[in-house]
Image (cartoon, rainbow, N blue to C red; front, side, top):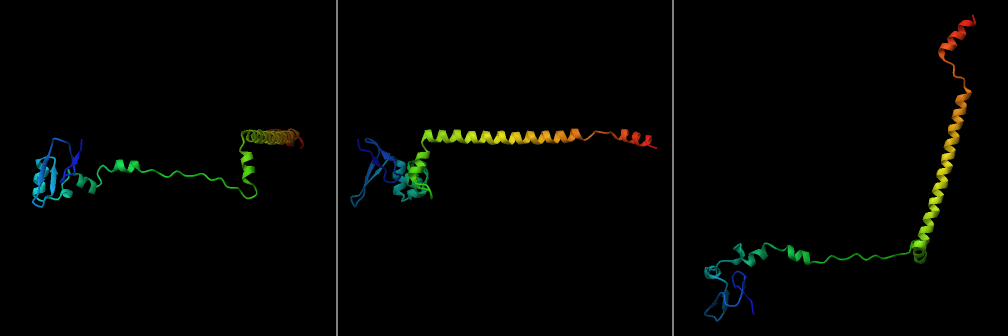
Length: 151
């Protein structure tokens, strides 16, 4: 089954439908219906008639399908050596066992730091409380009364 294209509108013409028009110069034109044939014979421009395929191509109608087909380039990851460390050293650090060991060590260091800072805070707080206990808490009323007795 051969599907032809309309000479004016660009529409598909299936077998058994449409008309053939042969000009004096032996050129053959195929038309889907009388509408496209009539417009062709009136020498109308298919690019200016809204329902034709040529108009839709010119005005980029239905071009979203073509845009979806375009492929985007995938980024390629490249591993490079860092100054002072070779690529092999970096890869060794990326092993799960090595990473787990580093993680546990760092957690232990953090815990020790926190415990030391907590002890320092407790010691400072105890020192402040001792100083406050050493100072006698004498109210103003008592001082006024004591001053009056000394006369």
